[in-house]
Length: 283
Ligand code: PAF
Image 1 (cartoon, rainbow, N blue to C red):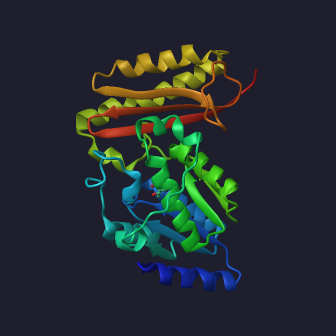
Image 2: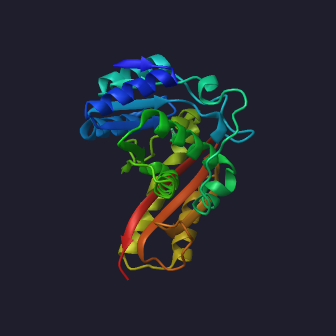
């Protein structure tokens, strides 16, 4: 594995790989790897000849007062894990390289970014789509791989790829969970042991929703009320949203039908945790 910091060098490696007819698979990350990231890297290894993992804590996707400064970073450990899991190139550019003095261009997807996390994190997706566009231009991948935990992010990026005619495929891989169901996230690090115990309600609330659907419930209001009640039992949990939306356009629905996303964002202590399940519902 090689580590590259410069954009020009990264472009050179990608150009050569393309000339040799190699398929490039990119896993965009902000580092601090956990099993979720590693599963994306292993997927990249299966589909690509050259596996590029980018590691860049992107300041433009953090709002004022969010955790940009505190975001965990462990580059040495990341390097080892990336290599062990099949990475060929670890691309970790500096902020100056990605956003030089005078930087003033932004990529914005409308609609899909105005719901769910977009409501409480204005500007977040603009930062994501901008940095991902830059990474796509620099790395020139044939595949880019994202996790389902960030379902809205993946939908937004797919929209951008279609709208802006990027010549690549987006792959979305299942959420990786701790044994008790908590979705893996770098932000789980912020949880105190007591708060960590409180998180065990999140995934079961989604699974209970799934059971209700399997039992025939189709009313979105009743299902989201049930999820809210389960989470409200945990004193320290502060619900940002519990939403039941169309799995494609992310618009709220009142009756479940077709591809449905049940998504939640809950603040426990300093950690804002998100999770979701995707269902295919018959009438
Ligand atoms: O999902 C993430 O870690 C980030 O949002 C991404 C896609 C790497 C962009 O900074």
